[in-house]
Image 1 (cartoon, rainbow, N blue to C red):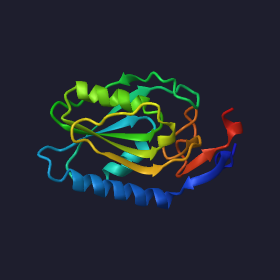
Image 2 (image 1 turned 180 degrees about the horizontal axis):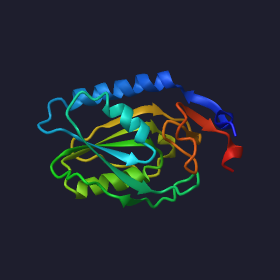
Image 3 (image 1 turned 135 degrees about the vertical axis):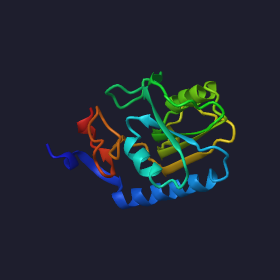
Length: 187
């Protein structure tokens, strides 16, 4: 089984990804340079782990790092619409600036759940940094918390994409690019 043969086409290659991640890290560093306490970067497992690792190494600020796991996909290509937090934070976010790091925002269900969760934990602001944004798939219009900002790497067309941490049935996360998975691989 040749991994790359399952990809219909590459949307963003390694160089494009690296450049965009560096831009996002610079934006975050500039935007949070004047805050009185280090922001808490919260990676959404498992899809964001590669993006998270690349991003935080380029943020030129002291930060606190944690992760949260939210389940909403199972093994399909569509969210079940009812995300649930299956592994919570260890870091206290009360009165802190939180930056949620996501692999992809499409329906908005997971993000809406996470924003409400961080607000309930007392975060003073919650920003979102997503690698891919699929606004055409949005079903839930989420509200950032406090002075939160929305950062996105690329606007993604409505394809089922894998790579750079994103998967189908836990496969393809290790691809170094974002590619469109051939339909015969998931139908």
